Length: 333
Image 1 (cartoon, helix red, strand yellow):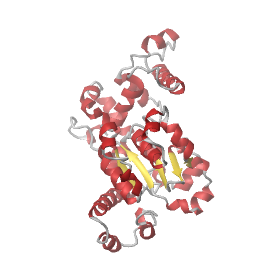
Image 2 (cartoon, helix red, strand yellow):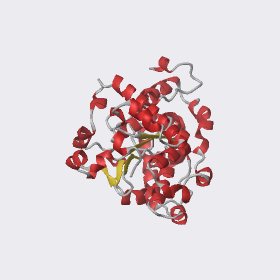
Image 3 (tube, one colour):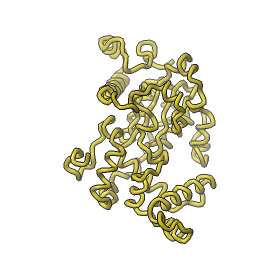
Image 4 (cartoon, helix red, strand yellow):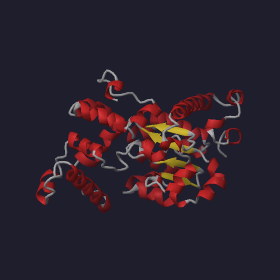
């Protein structure tokens, strides 16, 4: 039984009473109190920002509307009936680390997880995509009360991480064949939109397939190239339509995960050391933030301005600051 489920009904935007919330906190241990305060603050801030943006058509949608419209990115939102939770999977936002934790909670051991080539596919096989669930079930089933988890990361850091991982780094032959094909097609499509746009010749594609610079990559994004690794998470996860109950930031991943697991009352987690030394070993945030200046200073001011507009909702809804070496984000709007 998830903690606080009877009181909050997992609709964080409609607490019956702040007084009841504070009263309940007094009866919980200090760690849980601290976690709940942090969670409540983040969700209330998101609700407030969504309220000010309701006039936007995209933000006025509710989850039933999204299901009816069959949004192409619905597969990013999954439901885990065994664990009793739902989550929106955001690539390059500690998504692999989060998948490892869920697989561990499903009973897979560390050795199996380490050796598994495609963790995301394995997790997909044991969870249900929301697009496969009927609107009627979503509205009426008990799982509508499941905790709903959103993973996020600074938009510019996430974009750079995606570029380094999927575009700049040579494709390893140790990757599953389908992943290698996916990455080669990704690079080919980017070149067809940019450097090889006028010639579109095989010679051009071969010559530049391993030489896509960050500015060229950004040009493709700004010209409409879409992939879940680079798409704004506000367009994949609908943060103003889905009543999320937990926000996991890549920047505070370990702390947020610990709070999530404690609140959802998985007692076996601490005993099996799913977090702790495992996180210190496997999740270091890859230090993309240290490379931000080097790569983003290669861009023109116009590219920066257009990128900020592209990721505008990701920045605004979750309080992510604009890059430090720009005096004010407003001058780029």
